[in-house]
Length: 168
Image (tube, rainbow, N blue to C red):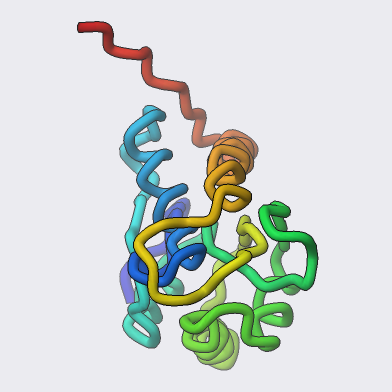
């Protein structure tokens, strides 16, 4: 396994074809497009990789997951979980791909290779069905997910700054 000392990974999860399940990927894209993120922070589109995420998870000291999560709260509500809350919460099958992430985290725990710090920032979906569009409530929450991601990166000493708007 590669050295994970200081390695910070932001992992966007979701399925672009499943309505609100795309929220984590939309937040990752917005973070990539609208913020300068230090070069030593890996921004990873995990899509629906499942167990293929294991080397990425095991190689991270700090893992920030962006995703749609079914926390049984009103649609569009931003949900934040920390460290041991993350795998425990994922065991409840929050979205179609999170069972895979729960399995990845369980295997990493068994192997003694969970990241030192884990945060999941997500949003309660309204609809998980075939559609290329997010619902308005979830779309409005994507910016809040990005703001929480920037907060955590800053807290981990990975200062981000907003890109200046380009005027034509």
